[in-house]
Image (cartoon, rainbow over all chains, first blue to last red; front, side):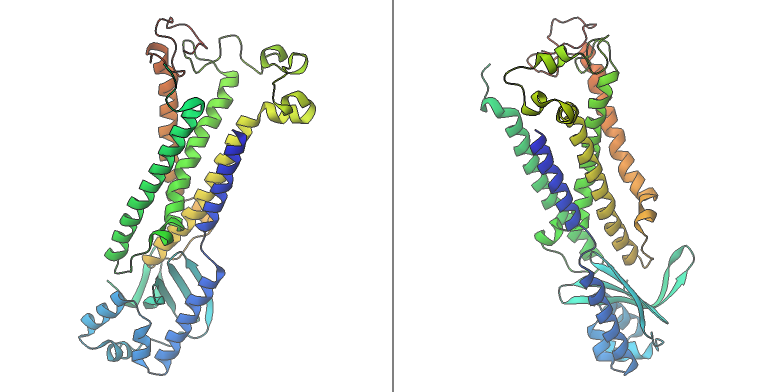
Length: 134
Length: 224
């Protein structure tokens, strides 16, 4: 029985490890997409920025602005986020802290995609974001 | 009655129903997870992605830790505590580690005793407590796994709600972690307490978990 129990314990460890936040590469991958998103916005390339949004966020933006995503996202006038301070990914969600902005991302089959941008922290409440899906 | 599954029927039976229910949990879990994904406007995940996710691991680990804690406490408590009339209890007056003769060690070792029981010294000391040690270790590992996978799941939810993630210390001192933990513990303690006390007055003919049908309610440390 101790052998069976040891095997069960080993399985528990493996299971625990498999459920961890994932490889550190996820942090970097989310940061890379955030960087691409900021670059697209700063160069005025709305279409490129829209390709990095989740479907939900893109549709919400188009519905709210009553315009195609590419023009609607530039019309939002999001401030330049600046350099990336940190990136943290947990399972299929990530947060990238920039000097002047906070981005939230979700892992989709096509890779990390932005769910919210232009976010301001609030005490004991969720971030208030200029761009987010509903 | 003759055994239906041979001399290892109990372990085979529980191994099979364990695997079936684990698969059932995974199948229903991925369906639930994907309902939530679609509800949030996100893409569904594959079965493989789900069973390697923190969501699945935390659900498995939080139940495992409480089960192993239950048996760890039952094994440990029955060394020193007795319950009059219960087949789960040692006979009254025999609390403690018992004599070498009763435990068949030292001068009372048998030819077919386990190797570590015959070895004496530290190996005998470890083997004498090995069931409690292993149950306790699996409990700690499962609880640790719950805390790590639960942290990932909790933070994923935080980020989806546009809130900051928390640290491991923040998570293990959070209401989320303790609510998950205590709701499992209370049910295990209720089940063990019920078994200890109901088996004083109730019987199941043929089960080693019960006293013989005709045994007195006051008979302690007797199993059928």
